[in-house]
Length: 226
Ligand code: PEP
Image (cartoon, rainbow, N blue to C red):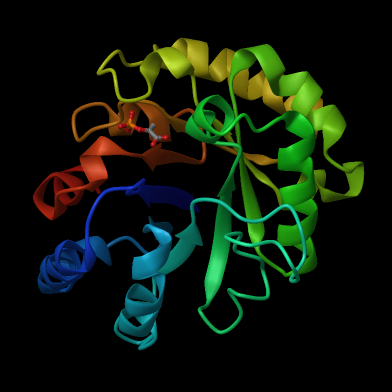
């Protein structure tokens, strides 16, 4: 199985999200043409309910799943502004992207914060997609409860390649995938950083999938990539 995550980050209002889903559905035969491919949409939180409703008809969307871009490190309770796994019940969220470098840089998330979010996700039956860069592969693996390691997908997200167009050499990705598997065990590893329709094949040959930001925002571009 290969995984293609569409991370919209903080882009798109409700109307834009509707337009994207309309275009996606029009092209659905193309998106669903590979049985061994999962497409995962990670919209901003306010569009989650709408997209979840659109995906509810599983016969129409058998290979498409939903992810959140973040999660609370706390359970349900008095944590104003945070989205707990309880808040997500009923929306069919399969994955949670955790510890993205933008969360680490702009919101000062630490390895421990990410590890707590992994605990929350696993307890709720949501698969954590733990983002790492080379500097903290081992420290992040150490912070996460060992019994959760196998449940994670680990995303190699080199800061130098995110949103820069400065794509990473796939040979380097192989090296880092091996390092990740040394630290986390035999986990699924995906790559993220300036993936587009031209280079995606190279990455899918060396790891289990891709995390796509910019190239997922327009359905035409995303279609070409898929
Ligand atoms: C990302 O969102 O994690 C990402 C890799 O973005 P981009 O594809 O735009 O580099």
